[in-house]
Every structure is written in structure tokens, then in C-alpha cells.
Image (cartoon, rainbow, N blue to C red):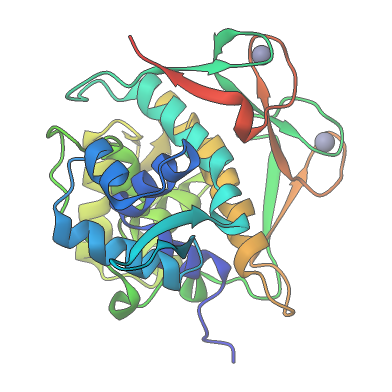
Length: 296
Ligand SMILES: [Zn+2]
Ligand SMILES: [Zn+2]
């Protein structure tokens, strides 16, 4: 089945919705009941109800009845959603550092081991060295191709999200992962695609689509125009942790017997690159349960 969507496309189908990410985040911070999600997020009850339902279907949450007559349920995290903390932590850090137009500043994060505010840092699981963009090479695995990495539009659930308005916590991240072409286009930029015609031909995207995504990324200063092409800015390169954490999650959760979509190699140690996050303050490997947001 060469045309079946691969792990990347399935991830974008599941996570390309800001409410889903925000609900996962609240669940990881301890919310379980409908009222707790409703109190923490500026979400309408219709949207919350429908997202909770679809997230149970996608195995991001388990529904458990804790009371009968009247029936009341709570929503528990799954191994699948608990494994999202590195990506969510990276999204949080990137938005905090690079996106100035949040209605309210995002709180910093505190590492409970060293009791400091910290930034997450990506390292290689094999050799423990810190890794930034440019130190990892990517090639397609057995299920990899641009076509298979882009979800069919029919499979997607999208909520209209208003940019820069109160309650939208991850405005620019969603312009990357909330759009079925944008993620592929940014990945292409990370592996060195630069010219308009190359984006268009490799992705097989309509020229108008490519032009629109490039102009969004240019306006957000993720890409910059350069001679006859587009290159990642410092802000764009700083998206690397989100990209590799998202990819790692996708391939762990959706990777099938047919093998990975993308194979990453850490150039320095020559081994398969698996991202892990470290605390920028104490250098210890982070765990999701050791991270808490701090107000102010
Ligand atoms: Zn390494
Ligand atoms: Zn620390």
C-alpha cells in the first residue's frame, strides 16, 4: 500500500488541532473532569465535548465512569498522551522565547529536581551530547515520501483558531502543525530545500499553496527570503526540538511493521538519533513529571 499515510501524516491528523494539544497539556498537569478542562481553557462546551470524544477515539484519553446515577466520567491520560510531554515542553519553550504576540505571557517552567526555571535542551539519547539543527541528518525510511507524509484533508478535524487572540496559546506552532502542507514544507526547509520550485515539486503541492505557506512563514520570521530561495532564520532553526520530538512521538506511536518514515542520524556519534530533553540549568535528563509551569 504505497500511498497509505505514514506515521507523520497520522500524527498531523491527530495533533493538527490546537485544542487537542491544550487538552493533553491540561490532562498532563492533572485535569481529569469536564469541569476542570472547561475552567482551564477558553473553550466552548460543544468543542470540548467533541474533542474529548475524538481524543478517546485516538487513544489520547481513556474515559472512566467514576459515578453512576447520575453518570459522571473522567478522562485519564494514556501512554500515548503521556509520551507527548517532550513535544509540548518544546512547543512551550519555543513560543515563550520567540513569539512575542501572546495575549498573556506564557509562564516559565520549573524543574523540580534543581528547583530552577529552565529551558529544555535537546540531546542525543545514544551519546548524551546536546544537538542542534544541522547536526542530524535525515533520510527517508521504508514508509517515507512527501506524499505519504501529508494527511488527506478529509481526515482532519480543525477548529477555527484565531491568531493572537486571548486563549490561543500556541499561535505560531499551530501555523506549522495545524496545516497539512505547512509541516511538510518546514521539514523540507530543515533538510535543505530552498527554492520555490523545489518545494513545489518535492511536496507535489499546488503553487498557490506553497506561496501562501512561504509567505506565512516569512511573515512569522521562521523563514527569510534569500537570493532566489528561502532559508531558516534563527527562530526557524530554534523549532528543531519541536520537530524532532514530534517526529519521534509519531514514529513510536504510529510506526508500523513497515518501518519508519524518516531515519535520523546524529552526525557526531554516527548512531540513530533519538531526542531526549535535558534541563538547561542542572543538565539532568528531564522527565515529564518533574516539570511544572510557574506563574509570573
Ligand atoms: Zn549522538
Ligand atoms: Zn534542572
